[in-house]
Image (cartoon, rainbow, N blue to C red):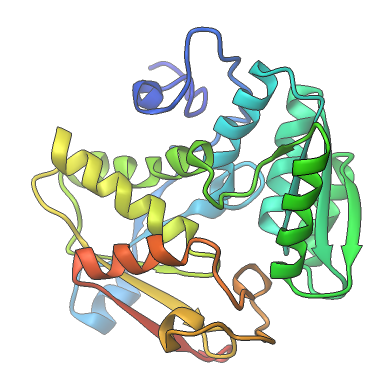
Length: 272
């Protein structure tokens, strides 16, 4: 059996926006476990499976998109990449940029970033820029810097490279189960992951091997639930820093995933 070599070196390569000239900047992301939860299955009366995306190299699904974004940035000759983050994206961008041998800069909201992820970011050599404001303020600043300087913006917002990599989680689930599940549940912050996952299921349904589509159920923190309430939240608050977003940049894509799949968005408290 051939050892797993990451998404760009896998059978999913043909579904990614890469060419023969694209270097595979990989940390062997993807191919994460899909585990049956006996407890949740008993509790719900359903067959509940958990996709352990924490098994990715930097501990989050962001690695799926980052391998594509950084590989293409390296192919284009980029000397540095930039992103806004509250944790997961910063760790992933820094790790993959280091793997590619290029620089990275990360804008984070002062006092509102996951320290464990920030530690990864520092360890991989990224330049940390603290911003007095929210994630949304950081993203606006990152976009402005990318417009004015020769650096590649690697946030998932409108970034087809990142989204294409994140679609692979749907491919893996269908390949493991033999078809799409009835329901796919996931946390929602900026909206990119629910958007990409739904797009992945749609692609597999159109081109095979899936014969059906799941309903997409997205969950937001009660103090940061703009998609649930249908309007931005000016001061989002939650202990879950990765989804502490008041105005999702991929708002339309997330809403489309919910509506097209017959799904829902709901809010849960930090205690829940």
